[in-house]
Image (tube, rainbow, N blue to C red; front, side, top):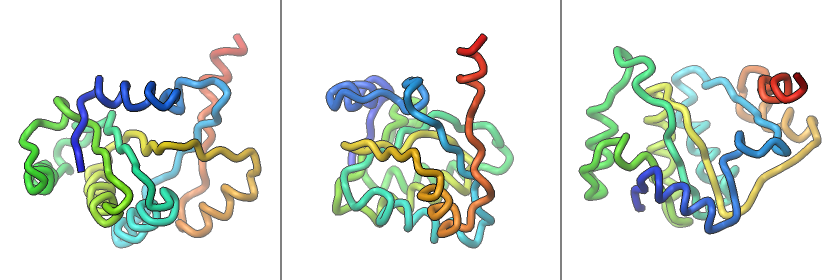
Length: 159
């Protein structure tokens, strides 16, 4: 596993002719509510093994320190240090997981969920569907709250 700076995350995306999902007006943005705590591991493991198809995945954290009283930074930094990286999250917010590191990915996703952090889960390919039924199946599998479509961009652009 490798840790990436913000600039390295941007280079990783541009090298694959990609942009962050919310920067492309052609992409719909889907938001999932975090599940109750007992199912964090299940959801994190499902994302790491099924949604990513065990392919290289970049987790780019963009939101943290939102609920400082509920964050366990000690747990995060000890996990990060176990990979030999001693930088702070704001110095290198990208986490590149190789295809054989699905369990590592699941652990970091679980910590991110516990800390209520936000960010991107990016791969070498795009997952895109217009079929609401497909997304409904994913929501049902995850036991997630109804998905909210982010229409703020569309509303802003239509003005």
